[in-house]
Length: 250
Ligand SMILES: Cc1cc2nc3c(=O)[nH]c(=O)nc-3n(C[C@H](O)[C@H](O)[C@H](O)COP(=O)(O)OP(=O)(O)OC[C@H]3O[C@@H](n4cnc5c(N)ncnc54)[C@H](O)[C@@H]3O)c2cc1C
Figure 1 (cartoon, rainbow, N blue to C red):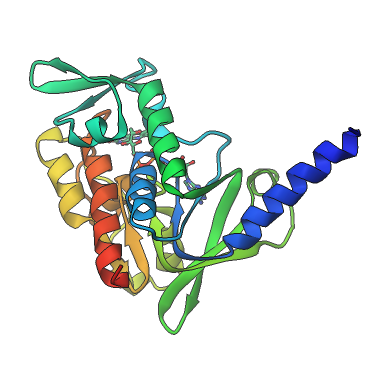
Figure 2 (cartoon, rainbow, N blue to C red):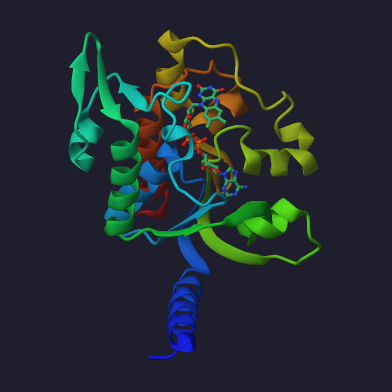
């Protein structure tokens, strides 16, 4: 075996995966809890799904729990049971280990068939015939360094903005079509009593081809933030998957 055999193997495998996923049923931007839950439920139904994550690790805001204390909370545990996460009942809440939750969700999404590309950042959307048809992506390090390097595109029948704060894809649309989203994209003050249900209720299509899930929903509809309680994120991911399944008639 030569050094270049290792390099060739990695390059061939990565390029094979990338080429296979230039066209998809669904592209999800953001591998936080909402994006990964959507990826799991879509892929489980046989929908060709690609997740783009700009950071090195998946999981978004899961890892740190609250203020770095890596415990996450939920109001119910059905989805956690389904993905095999250990829970404990503490009063009205269930707790889980943030590390177990993040890794289990990523593992289940991947095993269900989702392709996940980390270190890739969505820098724009593809908009044709007044419909969102994909994302313009670049290497996250290129974006981080602000280098003048052209991107490539990953296309799909539907795109999910699961970027958390500040709903980056919706922001890209708003920048050119401000009349669609007259209010500033921002969450409202913390109110845990209404926020979880509000996020799930408002999860859906905000423009032909573009869906919002997770904390992006709060920003788009100015809903209250909720802090480190994650059930709404999972339910929002599950709901957006159901909506897209119905739309694509799969
Ligand atoms: C910095 C931070 C701030 C938070 N603020 C709040 C808050 O104000 N209120 C609250 O209730 N909870 C907050 N949380 C808590 C909790 O983490 C979130 O509620 C929860 O993680 C949101 O889940 P999500 O899946 O919607 O998005 P996130 O967990 O935020 O995941 C979004 C993912 O999208 C990725 N991403 C973003 N833009 C792009 C792009 N252009 N291309 C590719 N990937 C992209 C991010 O790297 C991230 O991994 C915060 C967490 C963090 C880490």
